[in-house]
Length: 370
Length: 162
Image (cartoon, rainbow over the protein chains, first blue to last red):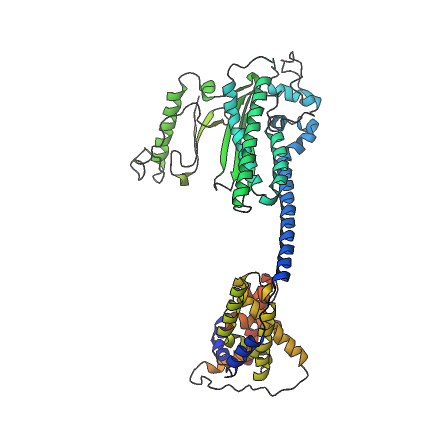
């Protein structure tokens, strides 16, 4: 039918155009006086403009409230904290991620808990969270505050990026709504609880550090919105976390941040915490002294066996594939290398997409057997 | 800006007058009526061109005026019986497919107005379905479903006729 209709266009095109058409058209154009519509047009413009900015405001409020809802997901959980602390795993995620919420129920208030409750035998549900945390809060000092800050880094980056990118989805004319709402939501999410993982003074330091980060992100956003105008890019952000491993004293979490304003690839931040010591957990802690050569050997042998089993794989610096000589590829692990702990309790070293192999191979993971 | 728009409109109308005449003619099937419609459409357009916000939409905007004028004309003159000049001059008789094309064309002409509009604009005036949805002020999906329903209907008619 399609073809037949297209063919019948010939008939349509053969509709005779009367010779007087041109004349009539020209006459109609000439007879119509040109319009001088300065004032009404200006008024009309004014109206559309004010309507537009109103719409913008509504949109900004909508965007902000949506984001608050999303980011406060965990806070909502914590309003049911009595129940949630009964669930061991979520119990401490609530505490780790939803810090800054001072209205915790007693069962959640690790900080004020008796320092004597070091025993792990109280298995009733109310004390589950204590049990999980190892209950060895001593209020003692932590020798290496920079270490703490480092383990926090993951969370900080994740959250500030989230803040920045979500804030940018507001509009320039009303960014203040978005930013206010956003910063509130995010700050409460970002705060590190005094009571859980970290020593109080370090938590305070970390929080002021996070505050500064948030401040910087807000300022950057405001500047961006003012200079470049609204809508210069579409942004959205989403985060999720996976608990990779947890037992009484060790927690390993991977936080994934999708931030489409910069990159299509999600950023994954890993952090590993030794809860009972209130210390970040490093590869050195798990593998012991001399961990670097051991981890390196394990990774190299795994790369070689993967290459041997599948010839389509490429690891830069290994084999003689294209690009192997240009890119540096894997050299060594170090204190900053990302890792998580898998269900066997073994550390799994992670390399980002494109770090040691072409990006199409995705992120690369190597389990290091202890 | 306004001057530019005025000039663009005038130029557009002058250079596409044949197309608009054919569209109008397809509705009213009468030369004088079609000429009237084109004339009225130009007057309306020149009165209202300051309402165009997007100069790129000039084409669909003007089609819209012509179609609305045509339909209005039919409504006002529905009781009048005017001599339809159905005879085409310089018909391509040498075309072997002429007969079939002619049948299809007449079937399109006997369609209800809204369906006819879609077929004419899409197949004869080469407008996209999106433009048609703007011109007729209907949802794009409605245009699509109407188009497919019409194609089915024409197909069925063709088979019956054979």
